[in-house]
Length: 105
Figure 1 (cartoon, rainbow, N blue to C red):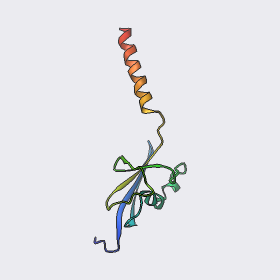
Figure 2 (figure 1 turned 135 degrees about the vertical axis):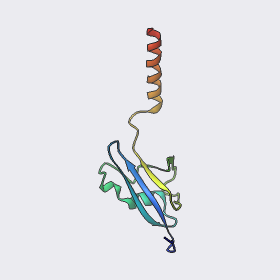
Figure 3 (figure 1 turned 45 degrees about the vertical axis):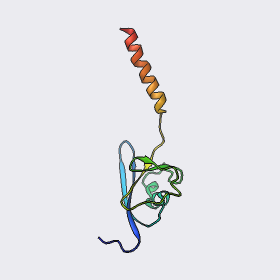
Figure 4 (figure 1 turned 120 degrees about the vertical axis):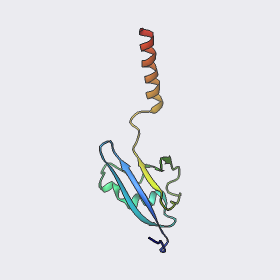
């Protein structure tokens, strides 16, 4: 398919532990990461999702300025869920459990 109308093809993805959605979009060249996410309307399928403030990334790499960064043809925008636990704290707790097991032997 030839693309003569100055649009690009992108995807917007969001996943919960039990379900996911990927929306394919044709957006104008220069469309920002946040604008594509807003156009996806995934907040209609996931009522708890706030598209205006969600952390976003492209192919697993966080985007620091989603309101300014323009998308390229073929990119997949990912909407990230907030972390439930601090990863550093989880690692610290896991290490403490391993140490306790070793000390108990």
